[in-house]
Image (cartoon, rainbow, N blue to C red; front, side):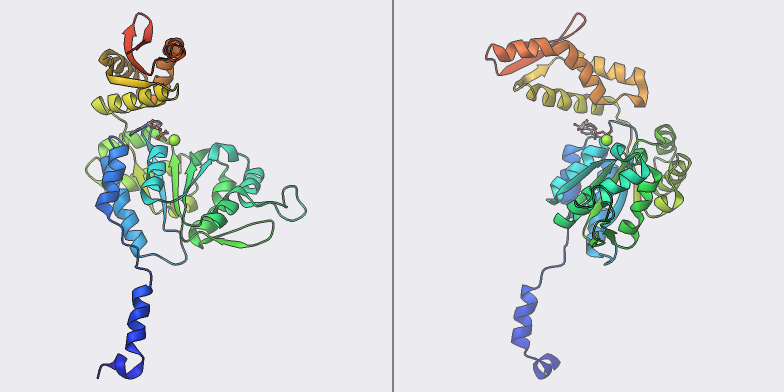
Length: 326
Ligand SMILES: Nc1ncnc2c1ncn2[C@@H]1O[C@H](COP(=O)(O)OP(=O)(O)O)[C@@H](O)[C@H]1O
Ligand SMILES: [Mg+2]
């Protein structure tokens, strides 16, 4: 007789096992291809991040977040966009914190983690604590983390090391073990750019050198030590710049309530943007370049909209770009 038949009611046990939640097994290839279909020119990062998340969901450490990941690299290369895309692909809530807002130590910490009793604001929760209480499975995006005060960075250490944050107003512990933390930074862009070329074929060495570069850029060692993995984004080159620029232009046109006609973007416009990008170097994001195009275009877009058109083509004209209704 089977030990289980002898020692327990096997039939009931089997029924109960069938009702247990399955351990979360994520299809890393599906996640990677979902990310790559959105985020252009960062295939290595997308593959790596999907593999890391799969591994970490499977071997969940009970007292730590699923992951604390740093996305580093030049502005306008898709770091914020990747974090948002990850939340969408995983079907998780996105808690987006613009860390430039927390540049003063004590005040920044109060806004995120609440105020102690007797202080102004102690009747309501901090932004981070309230959000994690309501959506513990979130992707927490700490965008441009280098802009926050170093004291604010240190406040995250218990979230990452001990698996909870303490809300200051009532002392409640709020778990961070189901969250994924995504930090982005534009710090040390030039150094990271040089390193990513030098160690293009050696991801481990690239991560080690990148950690050092971020240390030199002012991140405290205990913060860097607690980051599970650094992903270094490449500057976009060649057709990838044109791809991103074309998508950005399309989004901008849509914001005017219009669509781009098929083959409606004059290649010269994209060539000019690419030239400007290579002149300006890694400091120029596609967003800035599109903003410059928008300036010369806005009047003709508004005209097209007012005359009831729905589709436009963009042509390169003397001194800028104009929209022609289709
Ligand atoms: N690699 C990319 N793939 C697709 N779109 C991109 C990429 N990089 C930038 N973009 C576009 O430019 C916008 C700004 O990029 P963002 O992710 O904010 O850059 P950053 O690296 O500075 O965080 C995005 O919303 C997206 O539309
Ligand atoms: Mg960003």
